[in-house]
Length: 196
Length: 248
View (cartoon, rainbow over the protein chains, first blue to last red):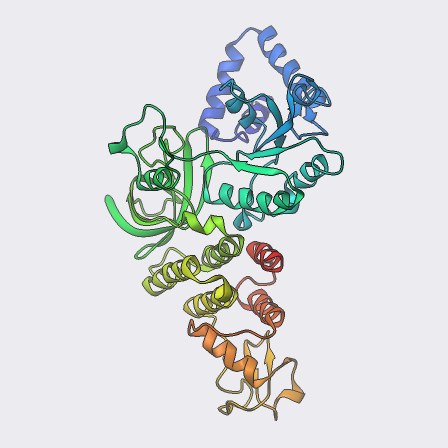
């Protein structure tokens, strides 16, 4: 049972997975053909060995620089700053942005002990240093209190460098219903209203 | 106990699993509680964007005593304090107040603490930039008083004699108060001139005070907290706040 317990223990360390779910996943895996489990193990090993943060932008990739930094067709004059590498996918799915990215690795949270030096900010400033072609930094941190504070912190650092700093707009979701929107979202939408 | 509604302020909020959030709430009648807001991260969640730190509202939850994590079934917004995130000193100050509560408060009801915390957040939200540093110190000392750790500033810790306003004293961090000039030489402590002592007394009453040596005030607060409130550990938000004040 030790190996089964080990697997259950490892799975239960994953976010959102408790002991019961881990046990269920373990027994699911044990019912699958051995080659399927071995394939999963190989993929996990490959991920652990090959995926690293891109030295340029911090995106997780098996290549360094990552596909976004290495792609000459991506607009080098714009950098979109996101909290986590997973956020890049959300922006890519829009098909509307063709610049480059920078992954902070989190957001400022004094309560959790996450201070500026814990984020990938020094690398961002290096990208904006002498000879940089970057003209705009789009801060796409989450629309939370901590995301706002992070955006403000970046604006204070980057603004004096002469680079345009913009922030993703906040407001009502497309296809949503005003009647069911919460007060904070409506207040933000009102504050960010624009001329028709 | 079944479904109950509690006056609450969100102290902390973080993602849990793909769609839920875990909140730490300071409530008026049930102290600090942890709740799970299921589905809060879904794009069309009924909670929308309101489950954020420092937000004030009425939390409805299924309270089961003995459980560490309760289930949130509704949150009626009273006051959003999103603006605190748009100013680094206000954000750092609010985080400091929140961390003080998180580190020290229990599940027991403490309505005075709840009101003091709420007033403190409002004060930081509204304070003019020029008096913001004084406001943060005042709200922090006031909250420390409500948590039961107020420093003794009126009488000497050693002999108990009431100290006159013009008398120079020393402040003993470990003992948590002042010593008169006669008792000071025989005990540890740092000089606390009359004007600094007066400032400290007024800050504890939530008064805005023109501060001369702010660095000394922060040092005193840091040392006092380390001895009495957080037992040698560092308050995470204090370092952030001090950096934000320096940058401002």
